[in-house]
Image (cartoon, rainbow, N blue to C red; front, side):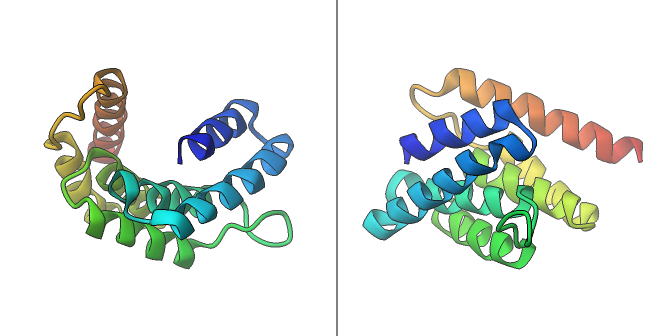
Length: 140
């Protein structure tokens, strides 16, 4: 799982089509993690793979697939319904797929998520992302 996070983070930093090889590599790593134990880290592999599916372009450029993304993100939410990441990313997915009105519930849930031990910096950053997306929604 952590290897996938590192590889997909590198892809995010690289950006554009040049990141496609890294994104495909991260996809394989997340799929392997799910095969070993999809429930590990409260379903984080489902969440991270779902994010790739909605952020990566679809065929013929990449493997992106909004329906597959939704399926994976909902599995992550089922495993960790109060978690900051699954709520944020499902909310973001809803915004990006034209369902902003539904997203607010998940984004507000993300703000109420319990803190994760040893992940205070990540939680602080994620809450900033949540607030920014909520502010953007409210301004439209």
